[in-house]
Amino acid sequence: MKTLLLLSLLVSMGAAAQPLGADLPSLLAHARRSNPELAAMQRESDAAAERVLPAGALPDPLLRVEFESLNKARAERETKYTLMQPLPAFGKRDAKRSAAEADVRQAQARAAATWAEQAMRIKTAYAQFFQAVRSERITQEVLDLVGRMEQVAQVRYAGGLAPQQDAIRAQLEQTAMRAELVGIASEKRQLRARLNGLLAREPAAAMAEPQLLPALPAALSWDDLVARARSVNPLARAEAARLDAAEANRQLTWRNRYPDFSVGVSPTQMGSRIAGWAVMVEVMLPLQQSARRSQESEALAMLAAARARSEAVANQLGAELEEQLSAMEAARRTEALVQGQQLPQSELVLKSALAAYENGKVDFAAVLDAQRQIRKARLDLLKAQVEARMRLAEIERTVGEDL
Image (tube, helix red, strand yellow):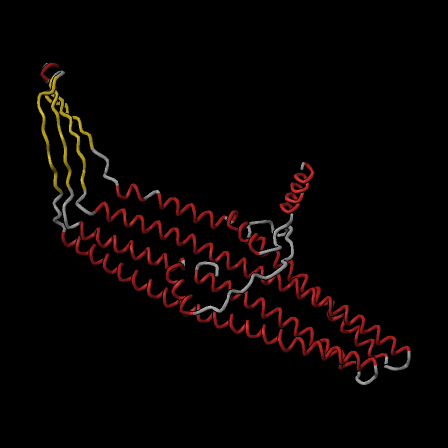
């Protein structure tokens, strides 16, 4: 039993020590924990939440102490205490609280928008990193294939069955692919640095190579995506909260037509005894009606502007989703076409060309052209797969949640 526990501990320690990058969920989880921009937005959201209670609270009471009859004897001096409590007109506190709550929703939506944008960048960089890794692997495999083709050409040249030019062509092809490998290695390094930057890590920090791409969802409907985006998308939620805040401010300006009150109680102390009590009511006279009408007009204009912005965001979401969904479907169709037709046909042509070259029925140029076609087919398949995932990342950013 102890041995099993020790082994499981060692396995878990090894998994924990493994560099990030092997899969996408671990990258996203790390980014959620460590991204400073997201943390800043979350703190702003927390700060906005703390403003809700003060917004709806009563103003602090006022205590006034008056000393009267100071020229009289101590026993005859009067001390007057006045305790006043301001009372806003009915509905003003609720309107202020509603506006503060709308500000909280705006802050939360901005934090969600920050995360959606960050997650999209990570998903895109991960897919590009995967493409670079697989391109390197494909190029290396084809390089090995051309190396074997060179050996066949050397054997045929030694037997007087082929010109030396065939082997030289194979060597030139290998040199070109080695140059491409250098470029791919540089691209991998750049993408690794980009991912580390998105994860708030050192640019040269170790990162495992991605092992697989995330699965694509089933067929997506534009109508369903738009409906989800309008209720979930962070920008749409932020504009909806801004609209609520504008409505609350409009109600508050309308409530300002009514006067605020202050009520108070005032005991009078003479010597060591309470000689009398008084109660009072103060009313603020709302005489500056022209200023209030201007504030009401301003609030109505801000409300109309917030409503227009909300409609503009909804329309923009629909247009973006149509564009992204169209590109994703095109990438999926391209993937199916390459995988179902182009790649099998290219493999068949290469096998046929190799066999024909060994039998002296075709020249070496036909074999090189066949290997270029199969390499192109494999790279086209990889490009279509990565393009579909990148478009999916954009769709998920626009919708506001994973699909």
